[in-house]
Amino acid sequence: MAATSNPLIDRAQIAATHARIREHIRRTPILAMDGNDFGLDASHLLLKLELFQHTGSFKARGALTNLMTRNVPPAGVVAASGGNHGVAVAFAAQKFNVPARIFVPSVASPAKRQRIEQYGANLVIAGDRYADALDTSKIWQEKSGAMPIHAFDQMETLLGQGTLGLELEQQAPDLDTLLVAVGGGGLIGGIAAWYQGKINIIGVEPEAAPTLTKALEAGRPVDAEAGGIAADSLAPRRVGELMFPIAKKFVDRVLLVSDNEIRGAQEQLWRAARVAAEPGGTAGLAALTSRKYVPAKSERVGVLICGGNTTAVDFSR
Image (cartoon, rainbow, N blue to C red; front, top):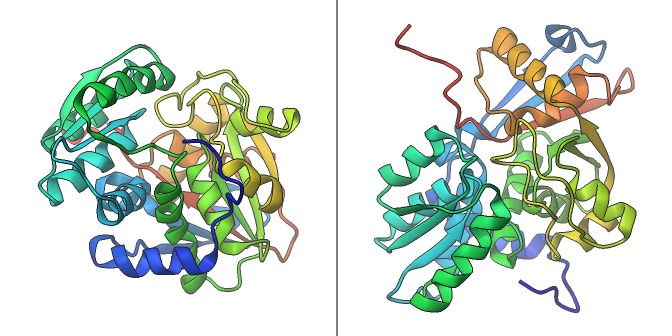
């Protein structure tokens, strides 16, 4: 979706979106923890457990917003996804009895592929990375007349993800800083548009997929590497055109974490809280546990745990 002359979304639009979708989403919980649980000095640590959202990630917010605010044609909807967006679109389409075709790359996890099909969508494997799936989905869109739902570069998607910021501010009005994982930027763009500089918003990306880092260096969205342990959720090749001006204005900084640091955060989160998150869902926490971000002594830090579609816990054992 191309950028407009006034790409910034505002709090009133996000609030109106929340009023529209709130009966269909979960108000996910927050969990106050002591920094010592993760070997940190900071004592004011708050986890927003968005992995408990419908479909296992924040993506349900944007998917529902698209289905509930746009005119869906008889051909239904089409989406490209690393996995979580596809699960969310399939969920929303099933809820409103709309046909859905989801294109995912080969790196999409088996757990996410299975959930897409369980929600009744037509699943197509296309290419090795998200960008490959997106290109193939556009061909189907033109052929079928289905309505595309972009994973991050769509105004409705940004508005839906922004409702998470509204909800978190209601739950934790005294936060100083929020750490947010970044892939295509729909989540951090929506949240930053809600807070509008009221708190420090810090993006966290895998070193193997530095999309927002590269964009900020270049002054515009550009292609970046797209790999690593979180490639099925945080490696879209480039950030969205719509979120980029929001990030430039309201995102304080962007940090990079390694695959090992992400895996270590996953393990620490499981040990400390028995929360099983996927790699992309723990990137924000990895910035803390790796000490890439060191909070001030009295700083109140929030961490968004944004996805839980993983098979890390095997109940058959």
